[in-house]
Amino acid sequence: MAHSHSQAHGSTGSYILGFILSVILTAAAFGVVWYGALDSGSALAVLAVLAFVQVIVQLVFFLHLNSGPGRGMNMISLGYTVVAAAFLIFGTVWVMNNVAMHMMSR
Image (cartoon, rainbow, N blue to C red; front, side, top):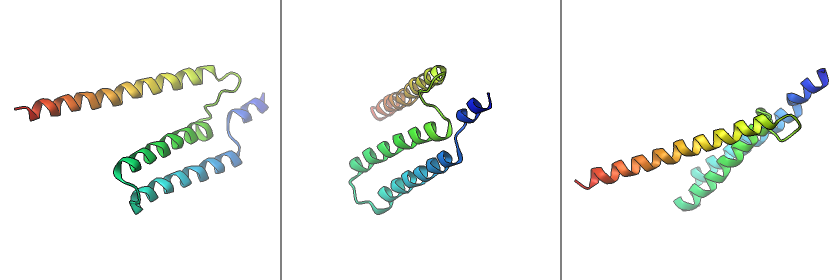
């Protein structure tokens, strides 16, 4: 029983690896903006990819969301959260775009 409990939580090594990866990804995002070597469209795409990878690192190393045995409900919860966040983000952008469009037409 204690063995499955220790597997449910990460080891010290996995936490350290997750922390190092998070720091590297954060530093890379700051570097993209700080040095301004990319045009705004490319920088936005690179930042979006870095943010996505950062979320994956956080979910795997710190929240322990993986596809191991007995983790089905975790994946369902993650899927629902992603769909709800997408509706929230894209719905907000759509509403704000319509508001801006109607305000500028007068």
